[in-house]
Length: 123
Image 1 (cartoon, rainbow, N blue to C red):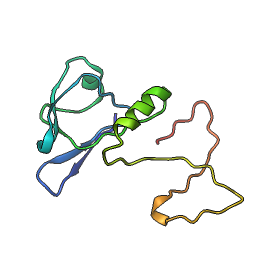
Image 2: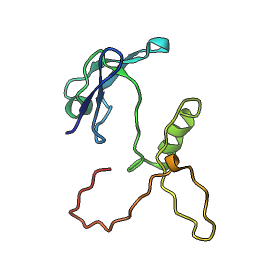
Image 3: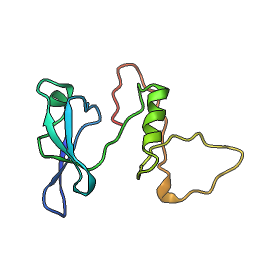
Image 4: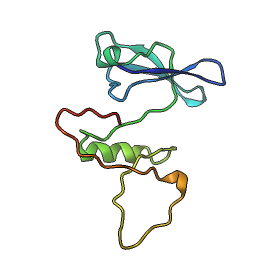
């Protein structure tokens, strides 16, 4: 399990959890201008086993991965997020016939590799 402490310019430490973490078993509190906080972590829950979260941690953002998510659930998540700031990660098939001008910072070149069944890659 990978997690990383990043020192914030404000007081405190930012904790980034691994991609495979699960939020099931987290109880949230707060709201409004104060922010959203972890009120409790249910013992023996998936969150208690996979995430290094503590009571009182402030939730700054969340990334939801759409692999193994039903279409209906993904659409519901996106529809609920429409009113908020969202950062998306997209995969685009290039149009060979008509090159599209791109802003350098908006596109990350991707190299497609043939993966074998036992290959592990970090996304």
